[in-house]
Image (cartoon, rainbow, N blue to C red):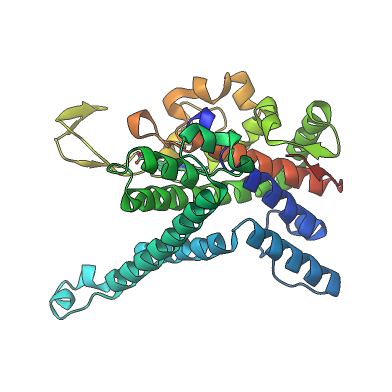
Length: 346
Ligand code: HEM
């Protein structure tokens, strides 16, 4: 996802993150970092009213279905990660045992139906607003700034229907959502935990916010101008890469890596977790020290010692978006944790 595409979804991202923070700032302050359920345990009428408001806001922004989608992604990762008895007793397959496969096929059908619904809604909205199908219109200028990735794909479909079929769009959306939701959520959670157990870092992050953004406001565009915040995210990704073994790759030809012969067609896993904590290349690798990225000239200079998003041609295309969304959530929560209120700025 290029920098040019980053504005897509911005009208949804910022208000939702702000709504969540405004919903229960006191709960965020006390539960920050614990994997507690933000929505659970509404004890009083005021909480209930705020929860209703937040749900309405999600409905207005068409996010109710995304919550359902997240449930499917979570269940899929549980089912696909669980041990399959038939792997240990293959004879079971011949007897017709296909438990996890059936469940996964059902989850895939449910997921496809949901994405089909997103596409239908977007197509309807585009027709109603009379969009002329230009991709440029979808990227920010038209549709009252509410253009999304699906809008861009639908506009490409209008100009090249043979390539951008509904099946292709569904596959792309499924891949983007499945690859982007949990990785970003888990990194935010870990960054918040780390800030809580390192109050001096939280203090420094707040000082940077005060100096560069000021009190009572926040905007997505400010995130790249907050170096210390970005060091915190990098250090979190170094210690806790969301995809510790990256994705499996396959050698396209015979080669030698570190003295080991790797034949063509071998499945290769890069252990990012171990690489990020290698004492030969990192100073005090087990410690949380965001400032190390300042001394070492940032993540880019760390080169292949730091690969939370992979490397090369198949590197994660969502890196810039992830850094921005995680930054936005952290800034919002840092503001909350200092007991300040803020107004969202579009
Ligand atoms: C902290 C957040 C994220 C982390 C740590 C992360 C990490 C990764 C990693 C390690 C890979 C595999 C790279 C490889 O094969 O070597 C990957 C692939 C991918 N990521 Fe991310 N990702 C994040 C967020 C996102 C977001 C927000 C999106 C989309 C909006 C996204 C979309 C993708 C896609 C589509 C692929 C597959 C690329 C391909 O196979 O060519 N990721 N990601």
